[in-house]
Image (tube, one colour):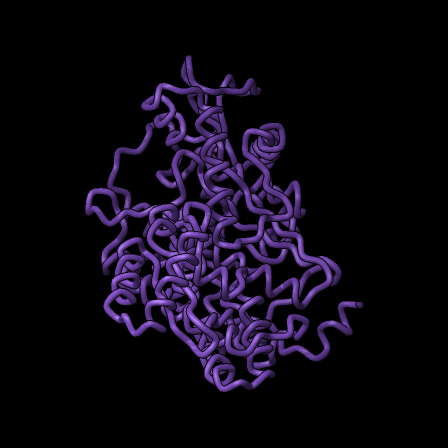
Length: 459
């Protein structure tokens, strides 16, 4: 299907552009390929719930773009060389490669559990050192970078629009400097492109000595390598707006001044935990794995979708429990009226997501579909399922959802207890029937009696 025919009946996609601070209609630079780059994790520990928010927003965006365009190229990088990685490997007394390999596997496992689609390309920083050195050489030759005491630094004063992305001026940045600035810097805002590697730490040979790249140059080199000098959307958490994305933009545009780098910037709001910033010192720091040990993955996904990606989201265990109850309700509706699974997403969902990925509005529509599906309306069940699929929900059947992971359970014994309870009820031995129910409940098994018999699910 051509791009024109696929798009002709859809409302325009509007997204908030952090650069212009306004909602804009988004169309691809190249009509047959929508190109997107999101900053991925620094792999020294399991991903926490704050990092997840950006990953999930990217997943919704990519799913929606693929519903609208014939081709989408999605790149999400991995930072596998960084001070935090070096420090953690030293603390663990293990090779850096062992730490990053294990952490990447954990990252993939966590995101797969949440039904987050993998990127088309997942480059690692250590695999693109040559591209970074080539970009650094360009910046030096163009007068935008300089060598000082074994470091290569970007000269922020050489780029007149530095600060335009984050809305900060160089004067305000200098005034806000509260730490000692290295004496070899021309300006306090100058940032590292390459730095020396001490003995015993990872390093690569370069014209500037043995060293390793700064963080910012990594994403510029990888995005350029896979998406070109200009691409459509660059995204990440709001905490990356400055300095990471500001520095990316500056160095990339200085290497390719006649291009756009990223046409559109998308930033995801902060996640709080019990109304406070998540931190280990406050005891409210939680990983994805912590949450998945508490509730099913789709409940966590629904909790994130309930808040607009640009707003703050306050995570609590009570909200996660409520999200699970909502998913129970949705699955009950699909159990009541099994859906046809080839229905396209309803127009109301397309319009909601076209309006700056308005997932709270989309979920309002899901509730209405669920209400109607509970009364047996087939089209409502079809729409509920199709809308949920577009949002990455309903990866299970109702039976799988309510019974959960049964790998550790002896399901034959549960069914046997249900038969014993049924026999007791028929014999009017209600005390025994209640005792069986209570016994199963103590094991985390809840019984639900209905017109079609008794079913069970994990608590």
